[in-house]
Length: 178
Image (cartoon, rainbow, N blue to C red; front, side, top):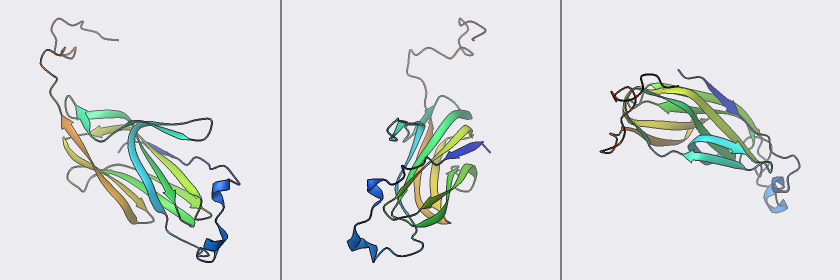
């Protein structure tokens, strides 16, 4: 399995967005409300600006590779949870084309104190090995409830005609690359 790390950036305290209008307070007195998944994005990296806003870099809908097996240096799954109250356990899993094998997973805990708050989590998968081509799936689960499952096709794509061959196949290429 691939190593992973999870990050839960902190929200600014006393945010104006954290206030709930009085007309909703009587409906929102529950001690625990399972949150809604606002978004989940597979990407190459996530950065945070000085303002606290996030930038998802290299949003991935399909992975094209020259050969299999292959190792992805870094993959990130950006998730944002809203409209919940309580302590929660998020589990992000990458499932192989056989629909059973868990290629890698990342688990993290987060807290929503008020329905108007949000939680942003970033699962980082480093060194993920893709053994075979096919349709992999990202599963987003909170407290054992699957909120989202989306496909990520991994395809072997031949280089276009006339494209330079990789060094190990090109007899005219230098024998050592640094």
